[in-house]
Image (cartoon, rainbow, N blue to C red; front, side, top):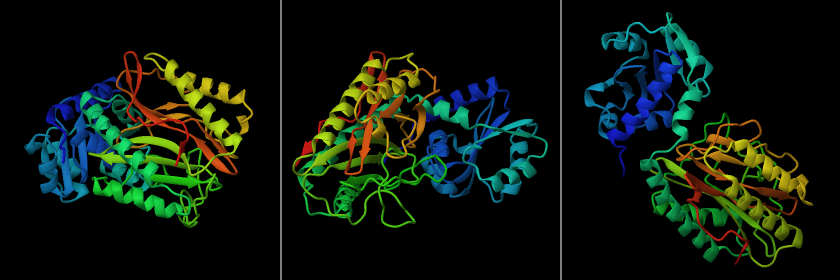
Length: 394
């Protein structure tokens, strides 16, 4: 079990405070689990107050003992909070009584909570902090990249296991369970964090043959799912010979994840599916060549759309019949971090960004394509997920 070092937390809080000062925000109140983990190293029922200048204060309702054990923030700055009604008085006691502008994560904060905070902080203007928090998290530190590299090595083990164990005649759920068991035996957290509203996702997304139903999830490939209550992904369908099995998988360790997709096939695929996959690989390689520090993320999306649009499979790119409008996304503590490779997203690539690129095609008889996660270096993207990229015949 890895605990986030104090130097790492200090660096993150300093970056947040720089942003608070630039935006004239007196302090930030962090409550969402992923952000709490990022800035404190622990996930408790708690409120982290980060002043624009000064030391942070972690106010914990449940569980204070675990918070002090797991967080490397200064011990005297981790305190108990019996009731949320006390938060104003507590901040005043620690010298933070005059707060005119307070930042909250309004992209994920429920409306009733927001209204309650308005009552608690009547004298303060509440502003949206979410863009700043996500921007601070966008560039990974060497500590974070080290964790992600370790996860990448386990991805190779998982996909080798799939290659050696996937067979026609199994159901999608049966093969998913085998991957799940292997993952949990090696310490997979079993929980995938997604920031987007109502965006549930299981960490083994396995689809075979015609299981390409569009779904509510904001991804290029949906799947039927086990019921209308969770209408995406695998179901009781039998995996047949001569059809593709697309597996989109994330391993979570120490709070972080990588995203990787590969296509397997027991037998031989129809020409149009094999050709679409070859084009997906070509598009991925082109994006790898283009991705350099300073290049706008939107340019990679535009080039991918151009290449797919010149092919016979243009109408099937990034989903069918409901294509998504992005071809990549940041990865880290949450699956849908910044940056986003989409039209209009002009943020330039930077060293330390970690992101997934996923050119995929969707047909009535199968989903094709692949996905790698990369860390951006001075000389270009370096793949953290390494496994054979062509169709893997078993």
